[in-house]
Image (cartoon, rainbow, N blue to C red; front, side, top):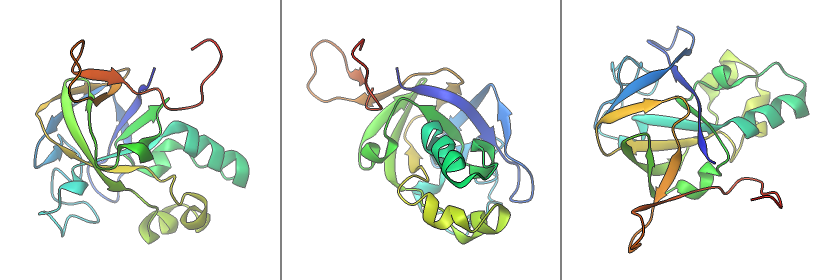
Length: 174
């Protein structure tokens, strides 16, 4: 099942992204306590853009990048807010989904930037293209916890308003 593995909050661009067990998501603001919600993030000069409210990254992509390059690069160095597993985040661009009790819209890919390369390694610029995560807009206020499922909102479904997105590698037992 697609779910949240870790939640990371950084109070400023200069502080490390630290894990928290849960976080409050605020529409039009971001994650409570995070640098972008506080208006001090590296890209906070675009407050009218909703794609700075929340970032997500796939644990699988970060682990594969570290293996391939031999760099000690972890999800914390990626500096995204939510670390997920079992889901292809690229497929959520332009779609609504739910994490915990929070409704979210995928806005665009979160490609690696020069700031991240300066903080870690220039290799991230090439190595994480289309694997750097997802920028998203928070549509409803609520709490996100480690372990929460990631589910896509599905229209016109009589049985359930959501369906689990398990779009990662599948096995015969699924």
